[in-house]
Length: 341
Image 1 (cartoon, rainbow, N blue to C red):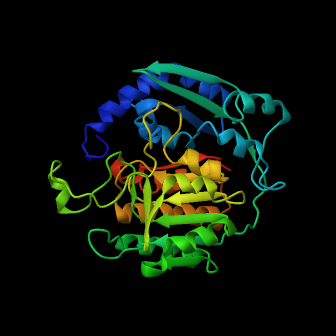
Image 2 (spheres, rainbow, N blue to C red):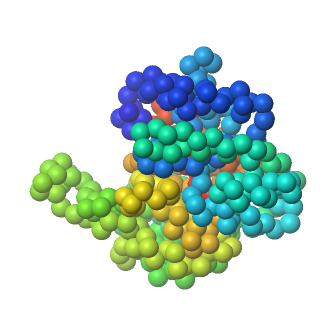
């Protein structure tokens, strides 16, 4: 319903709020958490919890808390200290709980069974450390094949904005946005921004008018791949990149956070693989995104991180709130998975 921009989402999101959040809303408020971490399985992995709406106050959950998501590998990043006094500090008493709830400082954990899916909400009570001036150079790739049906002209505005915020960034577009450059340069940067197509459907993906006929459709991309100027990159290979110093991989391709298998593992798509590669967090999309809306959210996100010193989760929250006057279709598909710091 969010993807179709239907106004009926308000009723559905309110109903889901009543089932998932209202039973524990008072417990959450009593703990005054800094943010919510969502661990979900099944179909709930493809739903942005930011859009849950309290019908009594007519407020989205995003307006109450910063929200991010966890995979079963997120504990590795959350237990690691990026560097002294840079991001979040966790009290010593949270360490056992970090291990107990997939690596997040929490005082309570709630489970619900909902149609064969599992939802866990971890309430983070960590505190912010002082702001710092970090290394914000970005390795960016945009519009690697600028001809239809692959053309993504809006993504070039994304990387142009990045260059204004971080002039020392390395940006590659069109024929320069090659797979060879990506594999060579990615371990050297703390921030990776991939504004390209991704295909995560089991039978592959098609683009353009040929998609109208499911039986006769022409396959343009292989499943579980990202598009570069010189070909497609198999997602499984990302686990071997060696991204131990990478704070964030941002994928503004279509549907990049959708699950890449159907074996029931509690992961959210490719986030698990990027975490295996060493990346602390992934920012990805849950469905086909609007170019202009994505540019607005991502540009504000990077500005808040690079110039205001906000954590990733708070920066994404505020960037989304700046667009919240629009239908959630435009601002809710971008989600943060992994370390929120």
